[in-house]
Image 1 (cartoon, one colour):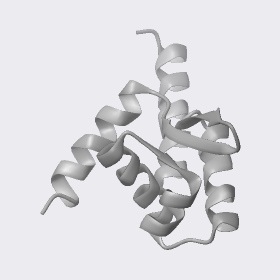
Image 2 (cartoon, helix red, strand yellow):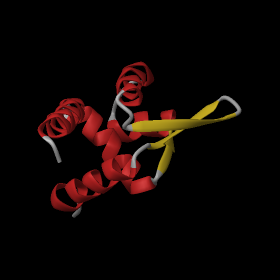
Image 3 (cartoon, rainbow, N blue to C red):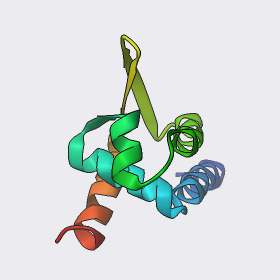
Image 4 (tube, rainbow, N blue to C red):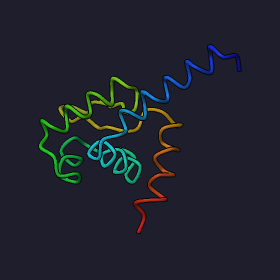
Amino acid sequence: MDQAAFEAKAGAVADMLRTLANARRLMVLCRLVEHGEMTVGDLARRVGLSQSALSQHLGRMRDEGLVTFRRESQTLWYRIADARIETLLATLYDLYCKE
């Protein structure tokens, strides 16, 4: 890999890690690793956030390409958007969250 591409990839990974560097966002992502897909209401209850606060975190993670959603009537179902992120989070989950 040439230097410019290497620097670009390092910058993209650093941006993603900055987004992950928040305990509440990590909790949301770990729940999504556990369950695959969850509604906003279920996520809010499972991570102890108001729906408003959760929506702000989900918006940032959507902007960064970490999560995506599908709409089913009035319900939004969230899931991890990128298989690489899911692999990273599954590894972190196995190392730090599994009982």
